[in-house]
Length: 243
Image (cartoon, rainbow, N blue to C red):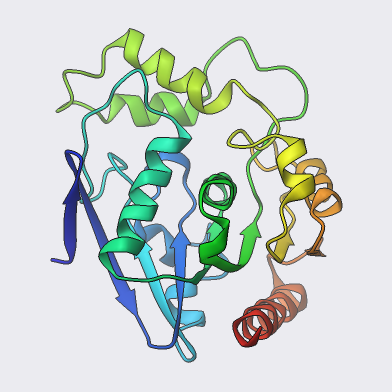
């Protein structure tokens, strides 16, 4: 199985196709694993849609229910995942790539862009997560479902999990970065809008307006709009591969 270890974590990944590399981050929140790309919740599956011209890399995020594992601490946050992503690129000896992420993948992308922008030629953010308004008084159901799956992590006490939750979602907006960073981010981005509570349209729209070099697709999930969006994604990636 293709995996590697770094700083106590074991990270599992798979590769599809050949060409300029694209590192992908699947949807499903903290349960983001490779298999989610083939589910209906991902209208565009980069591991099949983009392999004709690109080397597509997919991964199981740490402790997401797949094959990537790591200890859980109260200090974990977006930077922890970003360290995994950078370590994977280093392991594969990839100096420059595209990023493609859906749902939580948007926050993963922004965190990587903040940490190592020089490695990213272009990024596609499909229905990025975000929050409009104040943080709800109770934890999100999806986080609690993930926490319930951690039966073999005795270190993940209620206090550790609460600290981790606050580290991830306390900041608001798109969670991993603030508006000031997005407004100065020079990486070309293609934003595909969200349309529900976890992926608010207002967040996608604001992100696209704040980014200095962004394209925006307001509808993309079904029918003719999905067909057009798939073509647009390929055009965007090809353009910025050449650049």
